[in-house]
Each structure stands twice: as structure tokens, then as C-alpha cells.
Amino acid sequence: MKFTATTNGDKLIFENQDLLQGFLLRLKDKKLSVKIEKYKKPRSLNQNALYWEWLGIIADELGYTADEMHTTFKARLLVDRSGKIPVVRSTTTLSTTEMATYMSHVERIASELNIILPRPDDTNSNP
Image (tube, rainbow, N blue to C red; front, side, top):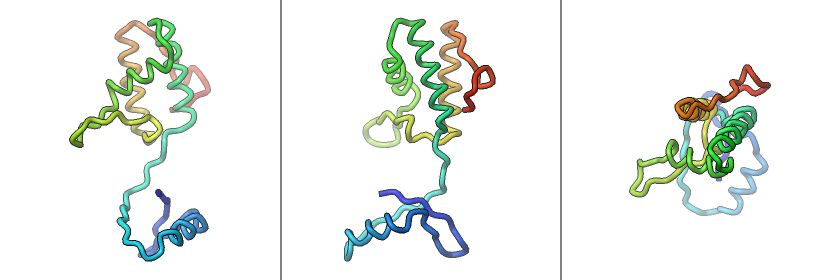
């Protein structure tokens, strides 16, 4: 389970205390491993909407579906090779910065294929 907290001096203030308390009660007297990492803002809804708009345009130009293009781009651009077995990451796990970088790569590939994609300032989307 993942919880978000803010530091206050040497204390942690958790955002959803009730959920945390319920979770801890179910794990009473269990040894736990806790990982603390700096919070990264998840990709925005606007980024995701623009990304799927782009996938539709690319798919139409190349004769594939948006889902097929999504799978293709993830396999090409989001492979984590840090473990023993390569794993394709999901765009849902990307931060806003990581999603912006990913979308830049998608846009570059589309440009190499002579496919022009709308920019955020051309639409109401803001990656």
C-alpha cells in the first residue's frame, strides 16, 4: 500500500489518516518494510488527453489503432532494464516531468514520419 505524507520538522503528517489506521490495524504485530521517497506529481489529465489525441492522429496516419500505437511507444520508450527482466512501464506511473519527456519522444518520432501533431498551445491541453 502507498501513502502520501508531508514532513513537519521530524514528523510525518499523512494525508489519509483513517485509511492508514485501518491498514495498520490489519497488520498488527507484523514486521514491515517502509520506503520513503520524494513525492513526484503524477502526470496530468491534460497531458494524458493530449497524448491520446496524438495517438489517434498517429494511428490514423499509419493504419493502426490508438491502443496499438500506445503499446508500441511504451515498448520502445518505457522499458526499464534495471532488473533481471526488462519491464515495460505504464504511463500511469509517470510524473508530469517524465510524461513531458515521453511525449517529446513521441512527438519526435511522429515528426520523423512527417506526422504533424497539435501542440498544447494549439489546443486547450497543457502537458
